Length: 228
Ligand code: G3P
Image 1 (cartoon, helix red, strand yellow):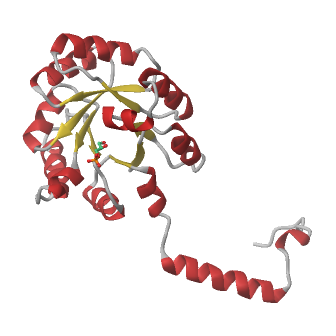
Image 2 (tube, rainbow, N blue to C red):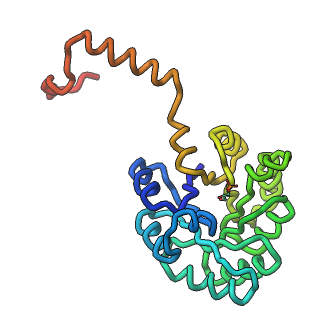
């Protein structure tokens, strides 16, 4: 499973890229507004930091402007993925850009039928919003399962399921169990995945017991001969 960071905060991204666990980044207009950054500059910087796919979303909602924006965004860097909303015009733009070899992420997906349309339009990624469905009392993860089921019937589809609007570690685990190709999550959620109180407790005991031995691993000269 690939992990994408769902943020436009360059500092947050650069800190987590060091872990080697960040496969890509997704942004959206709300995240750009939150970052306070100039959009194109921020995308350029993120693309230089992260070798994997970086989703940059069009701002317009009409076909002509969305297409022009998508073409402009695709020109920023080789790893830009153009993000378009799941609308009639958004899917038209998806079909055209995909046909030109530009990877497209279709966002704001809330039904399996919408995901089916995105796959037919050649999307590289479909972004079902898990958390926002949970917010209105529906089961967001059920949508992930439904889309994966539908796509598995059609081997010619290459659209990857990118579980979005991930809010907590349980979402990540459920998306991984379902077999989602990608989970995009806030930096805070990725950091939460590391933590378990028993890990902290166990480590504290190891550190304290090790101190009692009075030994230091780095003080011992390595033996030249390895034992089997
Ligand atoms: O990738 C889409 C995501 O940013 C939406 O998340 O938490 O605003 O529903 P959220």
